[in-house]
Amino acid sequence: MELFCMEGIPYRLKAPFDFGFLSRYGRVFRIFDAQDSGNICFGVEQGGRRYFVKFAGAPTAAYDGAPEAAVARLRETAPLYARLTHPNLIPFVRAEEVGGGFAMVFEWADGDCMGRMYPASHRRFMDLPVEDRLAVFGDILCFLAYVVSAGYVAIDFYDGSILYDRQRRKTTVCDIDLFKRQPFVNDMGRLWGSAKFMSPEEFRLGTVIDEVTNVYTAGAMAFALFGSYERSRDAWQLGDEAFCIATRAVSDDRTLRQQSIGELKEAWTCALRR
Image 1: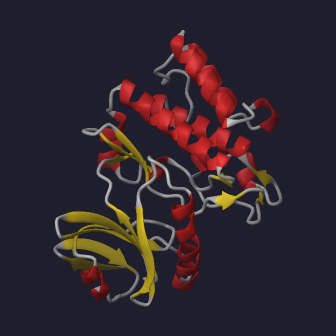
Image 2: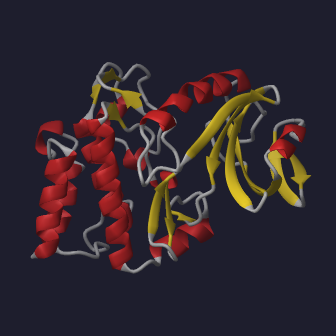
Image 3: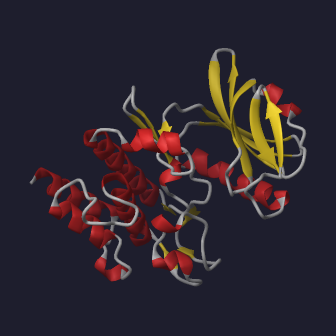
């Protein structure tokens, strides 16, 4: 692993790579180099506007595969952002072949990331008032319901996918790269994702991945937001009924979960009113 520097910002790669093409997007002010997807991401500023650039093709530090495979995966994701336009999804600008790889450009979204891979940001996120975290969870449920209604299923959807802008009280979903059109059957065994947010079927080859799978993901999000990643009752910050609803959502038995995001949302809303 080697340490490099761009605009005074350090970043790590397995080998040198020419990022000269980034000048077409503007001045780099942030670098995100720890993704295990094979992508490296940049915050850039041009003409008083900020953008988020996701690039595949470089020998990134946390990725074990070939850069060519990362390029192919990222190239396949571009249509998703065009098809799944939503108020809570990071706005997509364009995608293009560049720099010997593939880049996707988005409008910049301010906010703290919920993901534990960014400890300071995660701490600020989890220090949000319960009311703000409830609003985030409501936005997550609405977004997942929209994804299902559009004929897709969320895969690799986890805490690192969520940003929250405290000033604007705005939730942003920043990563839908691996979402799939339904019907979808697990063709890998262990799918991409963070194990804390993955249902049992996401580890088993040949199983159906669908809305009931996303109910599990949503339940895991509830525990991450209002309790603990270990789903401890002692850490739970809301009432008993909400705890039971979240626990049902993360049941290993698919038949015991709520059978749709809508059913989960209705039960959750009723629980909070009591």
